[in-house]
Image (cartoon, rainbow over all chains, first blue to last red; front, side, top):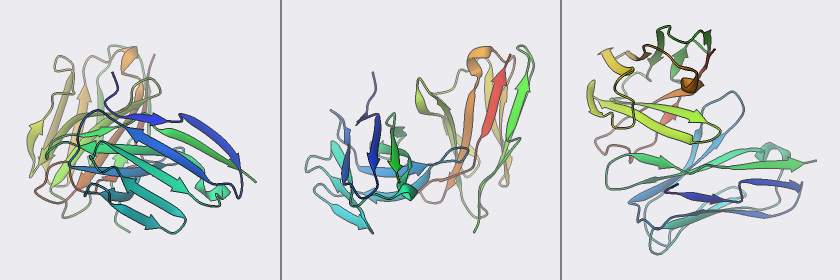
Length: 110
Length: 116
């Protein structure tokens, strides 16, 4: 059983469209991180959200942590081909292990 | 930019052979993590160290896997004997802080391991 469920697992859209990726759990996390991974490379941290209800923006990317700290979303506005990659959410419980979701593989078509 | 360095980048070997993967964390980082990534299981934490001491290796099969930090600039992950089911990409990550996994982790580019 996956502790963190990401949806959708695969998403292919046209350049310029908007999209939202979800990361859900029945468990409470002390914080949640979002990473992007490109082929042949390791994941790269995009953002960490800590407070329930927190919203962080990184250019065209908007990250939100659920009020109950059990879920998170990533919204991309006007997607570009450079946004293509595997997006991973990872939750931290207390100060222990970082638990990763399965990831959302995003493809932005020119 | 400082980076986590992993060697080798690729390894192909026959089952039963010993495999050693190495990681050089970012200078000054005091926490090192080992992960395994497969299509089926995604990214799984195997073990992590802080200040060279092992803190959690519950994700690692103890009978064949071992992780060590001989010094602050080198972490190793060994598999002996290797099995085909160990085929995966193994990532090392490092970070700094006293908050366990609740800190930004910087990943290397991984070792792609294939056991025939």
